[in-house]
Image (spheres, rainbow, N blue to C red):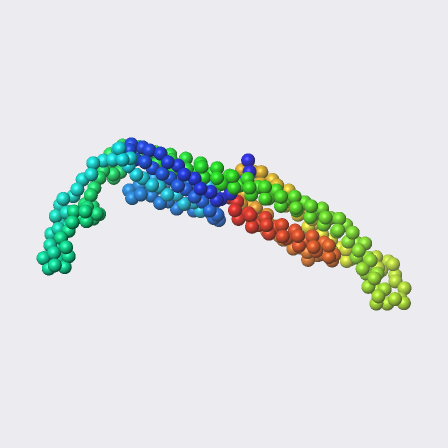
Length: 296
């Protein structure tokens, strides 16, 4: 298994006792887990188990879940008209009709008033039937979460390939830096000789003194520790992308450590080639940091 991303979409649908339900869940990047539920009126009881399911499935990401309910036409309950409400509406409008301010209410207009046309709904279910419907809806939500997890895992596989490629680039750059850094003492000695000869061509140079100065310059430019830490961080990157556990925060921290070592390498460098390698390292590290924001 590999790391998981935070972007995905899933849908689950089903039917229970004449009620057709549809869950749609989608997620995007987020520093923490944030679940937003959109439920039909009267179904607040399924929110706690839904949140518990999301907390068990994911650790990070902004997740939005929407539940839609509709009765099957064949199982629809008989319609009922609230005639008392119709009478009140007609009586309330009668003065306006007599004053010729409005026309007399039409039947189709009255039926469109909320509450006039009624049907059986979930609020009129027995306690036992409501509990069974809510259990079916929670089970459907878990089904949708499983589909979302698969979508996020697919994104994780793509991210793992990107991180693996970045680790290869790190290894190559670190190896090149070792070669360049290995030649640093001799290069420092040559630079000191050239400068001294340019400043005082008639003065005989003390080889021992020149060697001491070169040694001091080489020690200041020594990047062996930085390269060792970069190597260890590259190995940690490879280890993280092969684990199924959430690794987003660890990858973010690792990218900070990589950036710190690359910056130190550049600041210590007294060689143009080593500086170029350090800049290339920083570019790869920035890519790692950017993609780490997509990892759960």
